[in-house]
Length: 114
Length: 114
Image 1 (cartoon, rainbow over the protein chains, first blue to last red):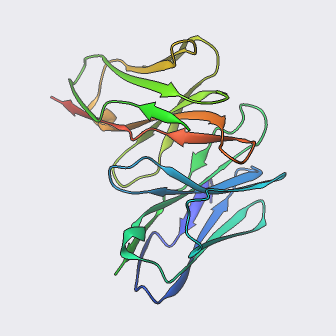
Image 2 (tube, chains in turn green, blue):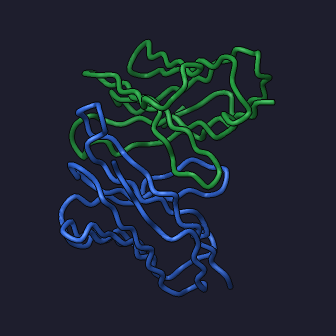
């Protein structure tokens, strides 16, 4: 596989469920990102992992928990979500330096919380 | 904080030229990106400007004026497949993190009609 892949592509879950979103990048990048895209809103940065740091958007609720075991894999653990969390969740990767941070996106996971 | 404005929707005719504008107010500007996003798909990278002037890449060109906080994306010889949302994103100092991250506009939905 090439580029950035995400699984699952679609997910429907109840408010009491626990699920995880997975992202894998095959570009040799060393930074990975989670974004949330809701209807009629801009892409919202949730979390960043890179060699030097982890960045969090302080407005993201604690029911979203990221995990980055290595530079190629990124997870987003979900628990006790709310209906307003329904959105497209996009993963991206980039190099930290150079034409730095041109970010390449995965296809996204369409999440519906019932 | 960061503020990025772009028109919500535009319509243009196949074969014509269209210009999508983006204005921004940010702290610590470090580059501006344009992405294309077809409905239900991932954003794909189109162009990057960090210095003032025009960058040309085939049918697409992007212009930046840092002093005016202004950019535009120019699409020539429009094709039906160019119907998509076009996202303006600015890399700037991310609040509280001391690092540079992308902040996205809401996107401009372009409809190309015959």
